[in-house]
View 1 (tube, helix red, strand yellow):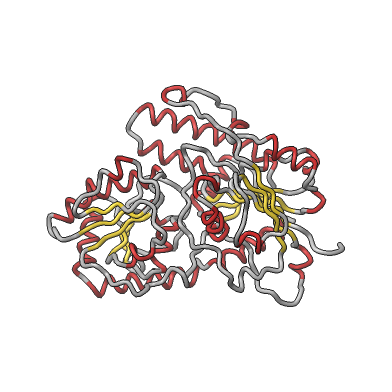
View 2: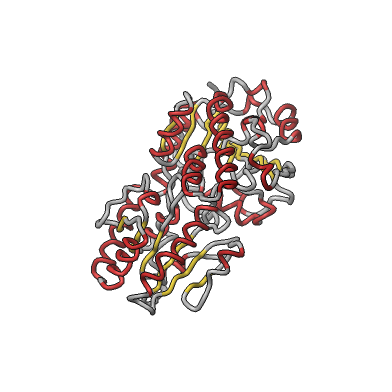
Length: 436
């Protein structure tokens, strides 16, 4: 083969018009791009050349959580030997760092979507092919301007864009980077939902996603998820091969820092528009904190995360602080003595825990929060599930400085050994090479 082979990447992320181009750059880091240092050309250079990224349009109501990763920065990992292109839904011009990373850039306005509300949401449109909105403009672009001959692998992170590929692309294998398995996500959401109409709507989404994975995903050559739990559910639904490539964390950016800790301060972080984070915040404030305050009335809690709805904002008081969107989550986590993660639903790997570990924080988390993270109770965190057990774990750590420090060091060691972006991107790159 003459020259390099090329990779087409679709990166699933929220429409940039909602969060600005800064979020666009963060999403690139968060997805674990296969950046490699410059150096002598080798076999990989002969196999991978061009990467075409895209930001498809997510499901409006049940969006995947997008954690606040740092801006893309000039490091040896961005001095890549692999050329990249970008196709994204965006209503403004692309500037800044993406221009340094990508060769060609195409932008398209997000396709409109008007999901039904109320009881209609539980019964309207069960067609899995309608799960994601279609963009005629993207289909035309892929048919007439972007040549399939330029690419050997389609990397679709989210599986919402590969249905746009016309028949002329049929010979190009697709790697669908699902991150979380949505069947598992909705199953857990349904189990924890008590309102029958909301549960019915969640079960509707679960069914449509199951049908999408079973039938529509046949177009893909390989799928990727971030935990074994997600992979097990996907294997039970689809015959498409699936591989676990876990998320990573920037261990240099997320560090212990110079911010002093506040006595009795706890922290929980996550996008507050994400239903599992909302549920966890209510669980923490309404059921766990009263048990902690009974013995430590000086304890306080910071809920960090963008887009908190009114019911989350209403949780704030003189001992509970709701930040909303912040430019940098690190100071809020660094000042906490303990990071608490009481998730009751959701799937995938919890980046919030990787970040807290990287900052050397002692963690108390539910069992559901720690899937795929190499969590060891008593070594790098405390695993507790009931309100009483979580409160007792927090109080134990508030009263035991030595154990708190030991768990923080264990968490930091875990991410340094297992969850750096360098490690995860190497694994993902090998998967792309094998698929191409």
